[in-house]
Length: 349
Image 1 (cartoon, rainbow, N blue to C red):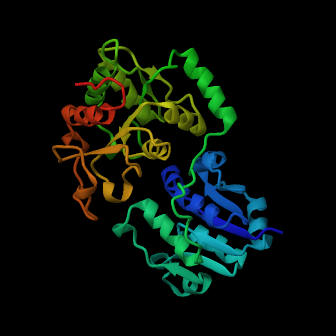
Image 2 (cartoon, rainbow, N blue to C red; image 1 turned 90 degrees about the vertical axis):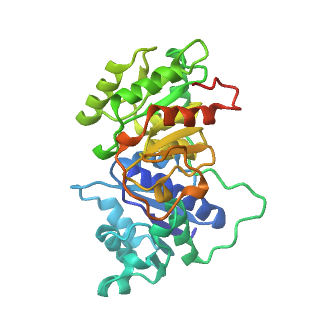
């Protein structure tokens, strides 16, 4: 029987995407093991795109989750990696009675937690990007070093059936050529950018015969729908293709994986674009890009209060929160031009 390893990531979609490189590294180091992943809520929809995972359980609030609890108690896990250290994941970890039960030192504090967890990483999120923080937990397993000169394995892969279905749909929409994805929505209202400015960016990106048609992705909740309606009402150029509210998470990921440019605020969609190495411009204000910026060399961050796109030399562990209204259209368009230059696509002004 294969040795079994358990990974617990029961937070949001973005957290799972940023944990995916650690899961890929774990698979690379332990190819003989069976890796089980536990997620919670909408994030579980992304599990089929994680090639490193052999088995998946999605915890559902208000449900008995009997198959999950039974597996935890009887699964014979060799090691548990708890990326969250939440009360629910603490219970899951304890139930396995695995020989190695690891989380972060900060999450291990307390009488019972110190007895439940056998290993702890001293990595602190405030000092690292979230991807690095997740990877640091693997150090508790004493894994072999990755092969030299071998590229890192992909953290996300769109299932073939989903990719083919979305390719057909994009073709039917006339999007069988380069296009831009705009994802203006977010779960936190303070991260919304001004609707009229989004419209101005969409108009500029799609302008003229050489412009990129824009596809708007997102959710269907009331606040996001109102924001999208305001953006569309302010657009004066070619009307964007609106797919927001009509796609599953995997379908949204497939569209983002096909785009030539991704634009959005600090949200899971930008982490998807980074996972697929799509050129992108991400807008930040209330959240710190030091920990949460897209993990990609082809991403550019526009930070509220700054006059130019940020570079690696600009990141600081602690940065002031600035309202998104401080970001101008000109700042975003400068970053867009930077991402498109040298790509063979038109550099917009």
